[in-house]
Length: 137
Image 1 (cartoon, rainbow, N blue to C red):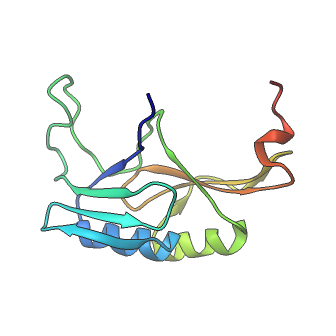
Image 2: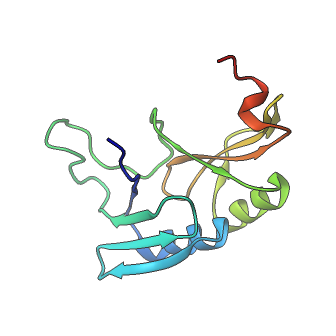
């Protein structure tokens, strides 16, 4: 079985999220779903920004509440860009915060950031063959 990937990002301010993701990453509004959600297109998978108020229940299976300060999660988004420097400048200008200095590895350059809602994301510029530079199998 194959499955399409849909990316969903909870935010507490839909308009501010649209402004960030369109200006930082060059994505476009595909469709609006009233005041509840916006579909962004222009990447390899659509991104859905979902309006969810801070402190609301994240899931019936956990006591976690939504919070939009910088937080860690084992799942994050990487955005591959052709040139890290201008992409990083655009992201910071749009409201991203840089978690540390960009690093260069054998496979490419990476900058660790957070969007204005505390969600981690990375900008990656591949070098040479990208991850194939370190692949072993």
